[in-house]
View (cartoon, rainbow, N blue to C red):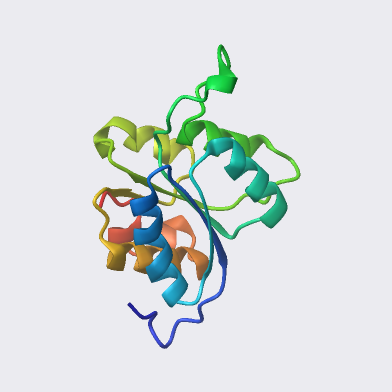
Length: 154
């Protein structure tokens, strides 16, 4: 999979998904398109990476296994991480793309309210994901993105 030759490919992307198969499915097309790709399967580790690496984009699953060390703490799902990104002063406010096996109709309104730029349903269409990533990192504001990329449910 190659990036469009007219598109300048730059950027650091953090992929947060607990499924190693999904991690690889996202990693290789993005890497082959020229992006630096970081990966983790853990929300706590994602927070550390976001602080340290300041990614240009976060690709995020919504569901994660319960953390036994976080008993009686908040559920650390994808929306928890999105809220943390928005509330943490020293963190770059990276755009977020959701990749989830959850039915998109369940979270579409919440995702839009949280400023999520695109949503993809698993199994992923890697070509559409790459086009969406390129568009977001090219700096297209949400209202200027092509209609088929605005908070897409792919």
